[in-house]
Image 1: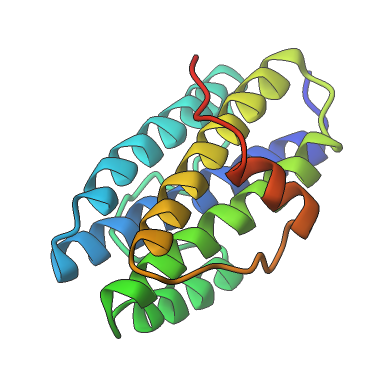
Image 2: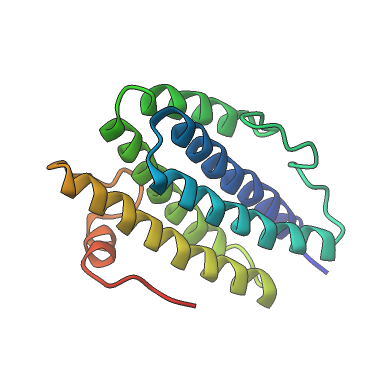
Length: 171
């Protein structure tokens, strides 16, 4: 039996992964940069992993009606609106939005991990953390290629430096 906190955590993370997928799909359509399409596909697999847990534990899915850019959580709705506006300005701005999303996702996943005790949720969250580190590496790498940089807004500079200075993770 899951706690109320664990149920809420799964619902929140399901929508946060949807936010990432929806923003990346929007930015791909706008800018045509394949990184957004590729990572959107990965975000869909993150959403699917959380949905399996929602189904397993009979928890209401906040993404039952999966309309692009529409969220039950109003904080995520406001963030989505801001991110697509910011990312629409240029490719560099869009890549910065990508790095920001992964930065936030890592911060939230790490915090949510501290709130859950169920082994299957811990396993899924750790897998999503690994994916988000890889996505952050990818966005940062593209920014560096364009002569730009990124300063973390949510995770610590130390954690960010560790991520970008370590290789892509598998599994």
